[in-house]
Length: 158
Figure 1 (cartoon, rainbow, N blue to C red):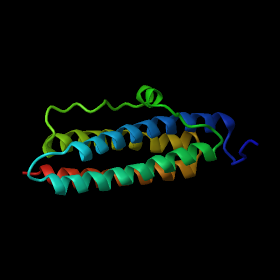
Figure 2: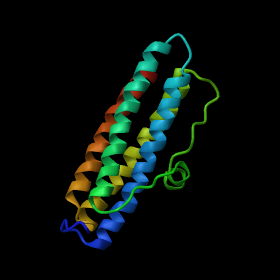
Figure 3: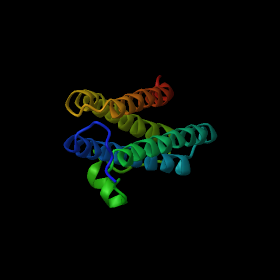
Figure 4: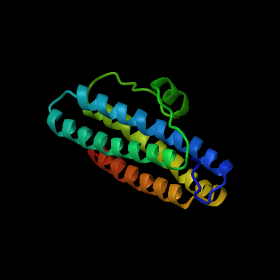
């Protein structure tokens, strides 16, 4: 049965496409954060191991929230790594060493890239798609990424 949420079919389709791109970004960032968690080496291993674990757990919650919103508005989520890589604007992990500074700089850059994209999407979701709930969801995601970026940024401040 089709969802009747007071949002046009055309708009739910557009929202689902946009949310699928956000979902792909969250999935790729979560994977990169898990890679940092698994492969971290150095004198600050334990501290960063825990930091990355806390962050990927939050990212996994974001993934679930975005996927559930796509389903709530009556659409299906992308479901393959290949599909996510086509939808994301992020790149795969590109590190030379398994040290905290390298991981943190790359993850921080991705968070900031997501923040900028979400900030652009807020207006579109609200004004063009008339979807207040999805607007709220991505606004919350933006705030959460800002906080996660702050935590990472605090580790590289000299």
